[in-house]
Length: 98
Image 1 (cartoon, rainbow, N blue to C red):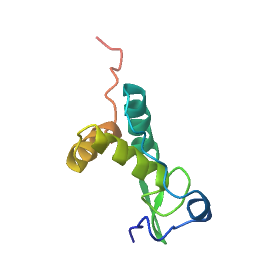
Image 2: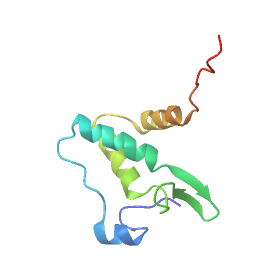
Image 3: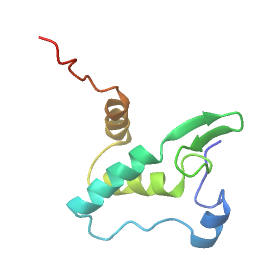
């Protein structure tokens, strides 16, 4: 079940609301947004999808903030999804043999 801004999904969100997107998004904001989107991704639980970082219903407020910041810089949701997919692929590490 997806959450909406009008219906807070956890106690923190009820008190604090949405994380505001800065009026001018810098490169540092973009780096933090990418980290937020990756760190606060979905994890499947019997109760549904939860944020892997804070176990609140997915998408949590930090994931939504990250996507909003990236949208402000011109990234589409599909581009962000592709970024997440690439980041989740296992890294190829050379075995050291020649």
